[in-house]
Image (cartoon, rainbow, N blue to C red; front, side, top):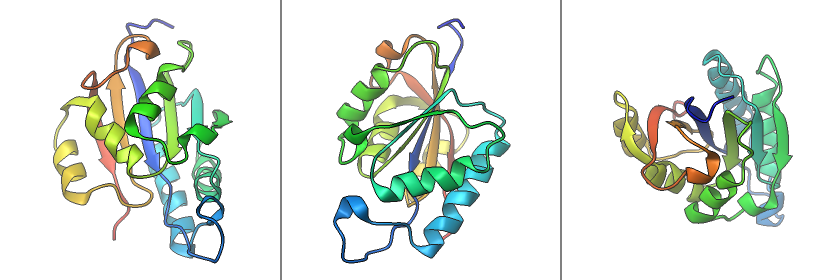
Length: 172
């Protein structure tokens, strides 16, 4: 696999969580979140992109989101549950992506706001079609995802080096 081929990053915010009397890290998905997570998985599967790796926060709501979304994929990628994603800043998420092995071409990160939206905004030096306008107008609601591409090794990923090629959010 050549580092000259475009790489794909999907930044996926967890689906809508419930608010039971548990710690924030242990909050599960709400019923609507379970439905939206599966819908997001179908939408990602429809792109035809085969993901090599998924990085998922260890929070209950992100793990549940990923489990429901990946069930829709034709092939499950290698999944790494990464505690550093929980409460991570955009800079910390970029540093984590920089650690991705170069044999991984397409990576999906399941995380939290404001970090996920911040990374999408910071990395996207350009955008295709109306993706940026839609992301700016909608924000990054629960179960939304942004798809970015860039060329080069993962360690070269930095602000402004990617192109926002798609954005999706469930209907409110």
